Length: 235
Image 1: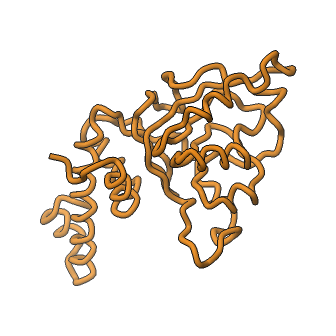
Image 2: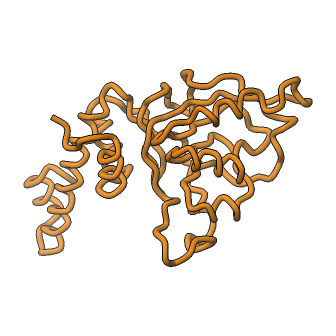
């Protein structure tokens, strides 16, 4: 039986108790060895001072994300398409709570910006992961919502990018991503947890995270790394 009652509790546990290294370790142990997106995909908030554009009175929600993938396939175009942006607005308008907009396939312009962030956040989506660029950086950061991308670049997508499909299978780097897979990201990267194994992965990761705290305490109290690994099987 799962250690959580519903999706909201599961994602809260992920963001409060887990971090990508421990989840990645569990995926490796289970034989899923290619689940991290390219290292260049990082939180936008990690590309600028983390205290920028957010009041010190509210928690910073920009450095960690967890949710279900809503997959988006784009491609580059070289003149204004007959349908501006392709199916981008349709993809945005059908986002559901706890979903993450995961886009790939176009690299000639920014794939994200202020108004897209506003739309997705208003619909209850949990974040955006872009195999490409984002823009409107101060405004996006000010919305205090997690956007992960390769870099910032202001070049507009309206005459350069076309969303050709969504809720389809995509690939980013070494990872095949299916609509509905779990997405988990923090300052160390973004990984994909296949939906058919997500409960086992998360339960084992929560156990390992708790175990790592015990190992750290033992080492701080004088135990050697060799003895700690022999005792706990964690390092």
